[in-house]
Image (cartoon, rainbow, N blue to C red):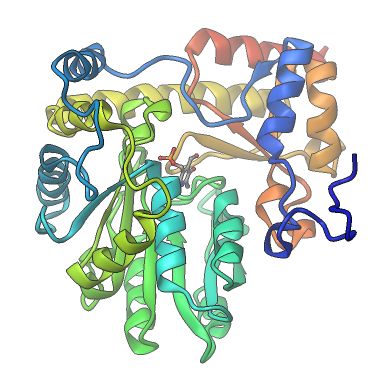
Length: 401
Ligand SMILES: Cc1ncc(COP(=O)(O)O)c(C=O)c1O
């Protein structure tokens, strides 16, 4: 059956026509078919802290959250989000009017864009971008304006960097909103204090709203530092900050996310959110409230564990001949496959499960300017050390034997 109705009109709304099946579905199916090690999708293969799992079980047993929780989220979680933002960043948000719990960051992104955009509004976003951004901008009737992060080598370290002049030039009278992501998936770039200060100045000067996706806030390495954009002068009142328990506590299936913003912005986002899921993840909200109150040692250990995994995979990929962009944040490594004599990331990723028994994602799917992303391929390192070791052994065997 073709996807047409009897009047030959496609079933899929034209705003979504360009968004077919996600690459993650295609690559995960390939992983299952071939028995390959899946370093494609960003989910950990080890669950988060046992005590937090137990907290979810307790909530279920005690009947907390088994029926619709309050629309803005359970008060315990809203208070914990507010305390977390204060404890880590010195930002004060009123748990009753400035925090909104969502079904993961994904719903927070969708609700923010649906709430804040009018058809025709332009959204400037850093390319490559997380795949739901483009679809949500489209659903809201907005127009995306990509600003491409480009590979650069500074002091011997290769990274994707933002060109602030390009960002400035991308803003027009139709720009309503900047959609940022730091630490950045898929490049692993963490925007610096100076870059964020310049972005903030630009947002104030051009009177823009900012939606900033900070789901990897606890995954920053080496000398990188996560600084919320909302902490810069003039930003608190114009910034919607998005967080998620999935990445920080390794419970991606629980889908607990949140928004922090000024009351009028939270009210707007809530208006859209209430007609998406209304509420979600009742008992898990109580467990995440406990997770956010874990001692600093939890966050430090989590980061140290991920750093060791980053270095394990990055070292293996380098030995196998990839050019590696060692990420300053997130749990993804972007590589350049040209040193392997390859140039088409799509073809490379489609063949890799069969050739090497490993699944990766072609970065081109995160670009509007596909050619800019063609030679780049992303690997996730949020997997057990033995799994990462096995994957690198397979890649080494392919190119070095
Ligand atoms: C940048 C970014 N934002 C949002 C999400 C989705 O987060 P959640 O699982 O909380 O919906 C992801 C997941 O990979 C991500 O990488």
